[in-house]
Image 1 (cartoon, helix red, strand yellow):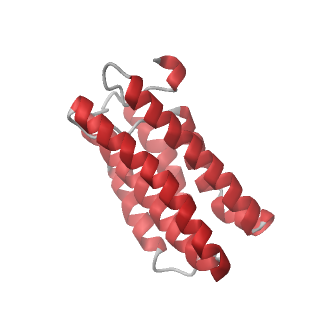
Image 2: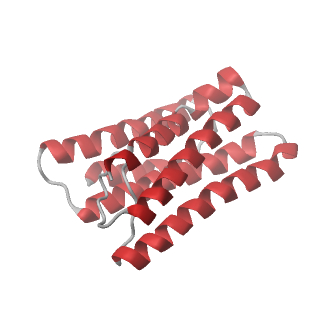
Length: 173
């Protein structure tokens, strides 16, 4: 959980450094590295817990929200409307999945699917994508990855008979 907490602190720190600067990339790299390591190390040491999985999901969500905030202020104003629409679609889908999961399972149901990990990987590549491919392609890649993972999570939550936070995909139902 130390790695997860450090990711939360790192994500918040990103709000106070110059976007795409050397310091930004160091902190951001730590956030991504700690995300990759925390679940792996917890499973390997057999110290996983539902609270740890929830905290990991919260940290992932915080990194995503911080990056969206930074991303929002890096692009021209004419994209602001579309960014708000796309983010609203993804967040609404995720909120519906959370509400359904809470009603069905009496707990917050954030899943660790491959598509969620893929969307996180796409988000992790944001700074590089933004610099290499430009705004339009970066938005398209991030939105497609985010909406696909959100829809899969919604489908899994609707169809699941029991809550399994570490389900890999809807094919595993």
